Image 1 (cartoon, rainbow, N blue to C red):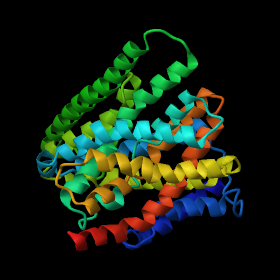
Image 2 (image 1 turned 180 degrees about the horizontal axis):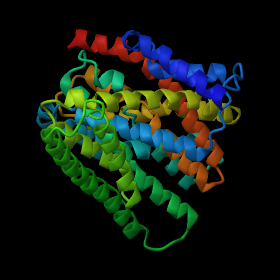
Image 3 (image 1 turned 90 degrees about the horizontal axis):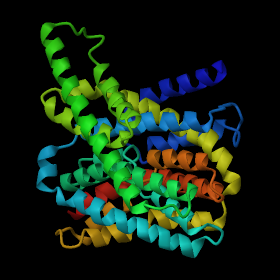
Length: 395
């Protein structure tokens, strides 16, 4: 245990020293973290011996995603968002359903041994884009503001929307031939999204008022000033999950509201939450490389690699291109938005949920998710900077 702790702590320390410079390089942090896990894990030198089970991996990925969603939402430019709200609206209301349908259709053509319901589950697992992996684009000022905000809002909300869809499909798989599926679907979607939004917003309002009140009284010392925001992000997520809602929706909507309420000094207040999220992301990707890939690699086949490649290209890009028709975006801008739909934390969480469901094709589903995330880490990580620069030159 202490050997692993030493290795991870030293890696965090060393990377933090050069993190600012590396963030401007073509190689993303996720590539470095995953490669480190692969190199020191059982597929490499075998020095890093992590025995994380599926629940521990799920908890780590969920907490990381909650913090990233909260801070990204809080940093949103609401003025730009109000002016161009139709862009993320189209991506979520048109692009996401089309992505689910196309992902299902391609799965029918590529996989022979999976049931139709399992193919629908696979399409849902890989539909949400990842806020953490997309950070290199949504924080890059070379990218036009409306595209940055559109991608940020999409990645912040699509995983929360996909959660009830996935849970419904798993419920149908567990109780085939059950009645009242349509009603159950509506109730599940309404409760997940409704509870997530209501309690994410309500908790943020109360927390922001308390922070302002006690800060005015001078009760908050400098050493404690950075802790309330990370605690609030986790509380929004956990409370919504506890009450049967979507913690991801709660974290994102809570972050949006917090960013507006604390707009005058949000940058300072968010520093600790951003640092905590970055640290958890680093550990998550190391665990992904050292544990998850090591367990899944023997199950990866050529059909899985083909579907993973199509998931990042055709299955994502064609629906986005169709959804954005008529918005005045150039072909290059639509292709850029379509390409930058990285898969990461949300798909890891979904993979763990599906693995726990013990579906007949569960191993194939999870192996496909792992392969897609691995391809995404490399492809999106290496292309983020150059394509953003190219988009700026073409604008």
